[in-house]
Image 1 (cartoon, rainbow, N blue to C red):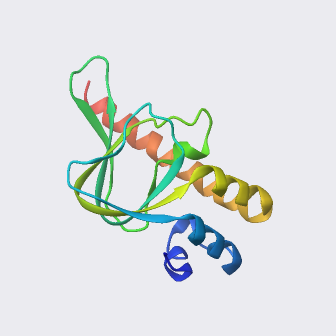
Image 2: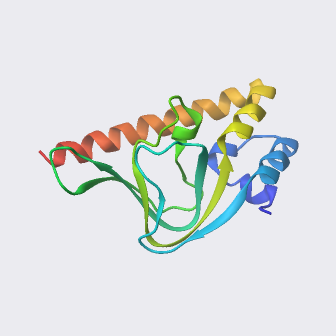
Image 3: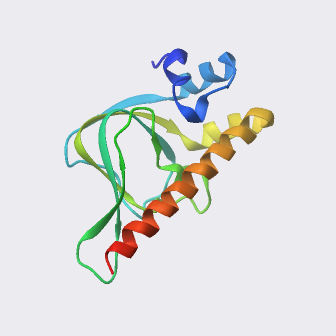
Amino acid sequence: MISTETLSQFNLFSGLPESMLREIAAMSRQASYKKDEFVFREGETADKLHFLLHGSVALRVNLTSRPESVTVSFISMPYQIFGWSGMVAPNHYTSSAQCDEDSELLIVPAEPFMKLLASQPEHGFHVMLRIAEIISDRLRNSRQALLKTL
């Protein structure tokens, strides 16, 4: 099981009380992925959040105008989150996540995590603000990547 000390290193979890970090640790699991393996694919049901412990993951989108996918972001710094679509309706991944190298991830199931946030709204609000920042950054990155393909 991941430690609460490690969880507190994630920007998404910074400032959360120890008791909440223990609950997140209890619902989480670690998973290993090999280079070129997909963590998830664009359009699949999003029911998990993913956090990079080590390795590198490319986020790619498919374009109807091109046969190849376009890389819109790289997750290569430890403690970065991806797969935020599990937190936002309609809960479908908006990109594919493919490992650029062997990677170790922390996986948090979205439904129990959302219930935990709802049970402690003063902390849940701050977590959701951080999710909104991540979505904004990824949208900006996606837009820039897509404009380069034109």
